[in-house]
Image (spheres, rainbow, N blue to C red):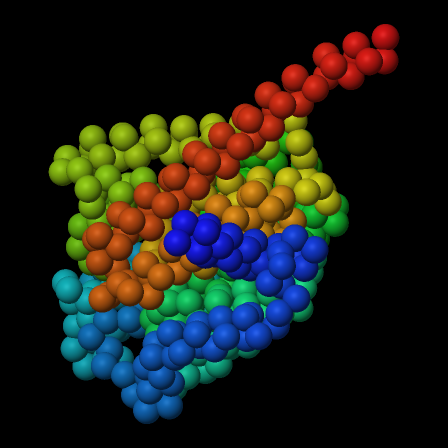
Length: 438
């Protein structure tokens, strides 16, 4: 009996190793039958949300909520020449009621939280009905999803073909993807931007990497950690390209809504982090602000102060993990990219369920380029997170936020600890090397 238990444990470890690494590291990786069964299981588990999205797309949906309503209202305000009212809740609510026929969200309005230039880019949708605009936007999002899948396939290039297929299918049927599609969100654009930036930075194409990061200007707070990191690393080519794109976005925003409204946007966004209504519920977000709001009763000022302190600590951990290393084709770059992504998620005070797709490029990079031990534990954590997301009765339940955010915190600490252990081992080896040479 003990021998059977030991053999069973070995089989489980071999299966994890096969999922996490190339064929030479896993005995099961030469068996496509196992990976095919895993793909079938993933598709079966993730089919229901896709069916619901197809219903919303081809039939109709009940617009009681849905983030796309706010984007549509912003596009209409800009198209009607009233872009200066983009951040006035009463004006946004009036356009939403006109489009839907009733108030939306728990308070009757879903505010627009993004920069003015994004509302201008959505302008071509303003002349359509809400359902028609949602269909056009969804088709665009599906095309972007195909691009995201291709970029992830490129990131996973060191893996065998069957395990690249497993990772891409797991991404396509994950609940954050379908949830974002149903909401009419732009999170797939952010994921594609993050994936492309990783590939370009890894190949040292720094200027193009800055351009690849520019779609994150749609949600500018996500750029704060990486900009701070690149200033510290003096990666001026990345920053100069990104700065040019940012200047163009600012200029377009001023033209769209006027200088006063454009200048008031950062204050509006910062003030919204204190709300607990109007489509903004801190307990449903995945950063430190949300984790504290969901698990520790405290006042708004105290919670934000604690979240800011923890955010600085997260950025410090990310800086420590990057250490003296830069960007490039090294084996550990994927691990450092995941550390940066986790810190970005925890620092952002508007990080929702659909935005967790931003973690996928870093996870795939570590599974593709990391050592067997790194692949093993990260595959376990990622698999657990995938199941937690799938089994949630509703994606934004508080317990669900707590668990996934806690997994992210533990992963960040574990990655920083592995970096510390790696440095310690290198320091222990150097005296031996010097002694041998002498």
